[in-house]
Image (spheres, rainbow, N blue to C red):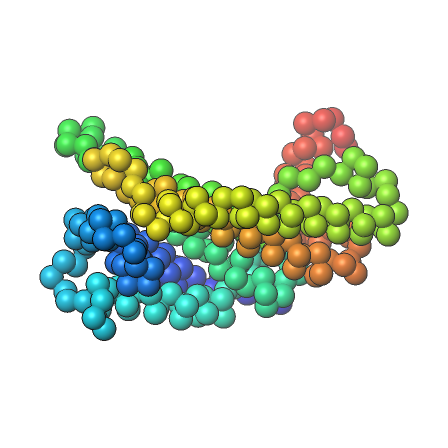
Length: 281
């Protein structure tokens, strides 16, 4: 059912998605001014000044009477297109959870995007090490950019981990229960996760989106990335997506026997190493 490799597309499409998403995130003030304008003139002036200071393409005029230029619109419109292409071209790897539906392709593609982000974060760190210890001219942005990317890696990988059923679970009581009680436990855990997501969003939506995001709160350093304005909203979005993925997992696994572990998920070499370490034949 699975191909061995997706070829160059497994690299290009997630990279293009990460590039467009990065552009949209960095130019967040332009999207706020056009789509979510402030009623307060002083706040509008503050966001406008911030956009002009951080704009990567300052010479391009705005379109449709707004602030967003051609590149801003292109990056925004390309995001759903690249997302669909990425989901359609995901190639299931042999070590991944074998039973997946078309709804799981979103999480699988985000796993590939996370891979690109980890590579990007590593390259930034290597670049900083080279500049700091070879040229002796360290940057003002590498450390905070790495921190920023790492935050998104941590969040996005949670969706992928939920789809792969590789999150931490304790089976001490679960394994001794009969199948009907196991199903009840699965339903209960999913309901509790959904309730957690609901109350987290309900309790912090106004502060996160009304203050952190809408005012585009910055980090307050020399590089001054919008970490509070992006990471905190991303937490709420990702928690909701993780809860949704948990519901999809519950539906997909409802008629499966959890005792039947797929061969693809068993690492024979690691299993043999564990047996030798504990003296088992």
